[in-house]
Image (cartoon, rainbow, N blue to C red; front, side, top):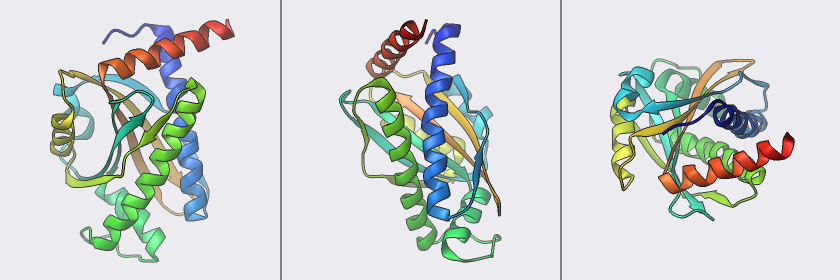
Length: 204
């Protein structure tokens, strides 16, 4: 996956727009201020995914990309357990952070993931001028690198690298760290880069 400097900058801007909409939706849902750092756009070898997510128990809300480019690949909202618990505590009115996930947490995480990823895909698709819609979400709770390995195994074909959007979300009450990860099929990535190149050319 060879991306030049211009394409990486465009991918960062794409990630920034999508993540900004996701953060706004979370802020509205939780009724508190959500501040967002500038997202990173990284090309990561799947074999090195453990270097980025490690062994911490995490929640992954997984969506298949549907729409104009079909099959499109997957989008994953990743949250470490500590962040996910703080988030669901805010939603559910709880204060106990030293606990395991329960069914109410899982339901809340599916709702949050659905809203955030829907906004992420809608914003990026609008910029690109195409249609990208999320499938119904699936939730995985496991060590992050193991959970990502399971997601990757669902992607047919040979995919050796992923586009990683790393975004820090901070509320006025709790620190909530999340990462949005795209695992596009080769045709999806090619189409996105083609459209981004055209957008960049129009600005120049």
